[in-house]
Length: 273
Image (cartoon, rainbow, N blue to C red):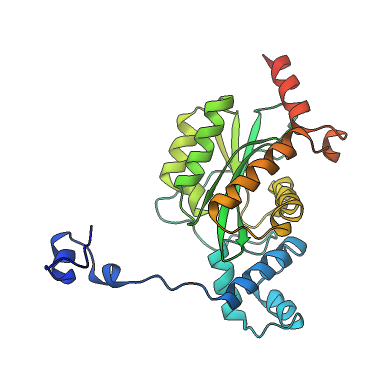
């Protein structure tokens, strides 16, 4: 909308478009190579020690030779969308206007496809930058039903992944997520409830509520992401497409008696029908 080569001053263009001048003049600051290396190592440490907060991670990073303080570690963790995972008292309120739903899975036997779907977001390092991955997993069969990449932590790519899964496989009985702002947004909540599914959310910081998707992140990163240095988002998408196909159709899963997710999901779907 703003044309910096136009004869009309940028400030006047912003005024006519009812835009703040600070937003117009702001230029994104690229992330330094040092910070990208830090974020990559924080991601690895978080997978190994998900209970570690900024204080513990700072100490581990310093032991690895990084000159970093706790405030900077905390800033990078927020940028990456990660936090220490542990049960703690509820000390903060959700965003005003954002609904938080109760956890519906406690005590339930989940053994049928499309009974429960889980969604989560993780950070993926690339050669010069990073990207976020959201995945829709069928809880009982561990099958990847849909996934999307984004360079921002917004709700739209989560809604797109959910819509893709529902278009392919119909709506589940329950959709389970954490309490991230992407999932508590009105856009995502409407997509879940509009499908007829129930909405379940993990307790804040409660790793046991959704532990298997945390294990999936470990699997996809160690078997795919950390073995490569994606040049572009398109490159990441290409390689992840191949890996997700392998994960669903070829990779034996210990939780499935060494069967693949496809081998469990589709026969169970046929019996359910």
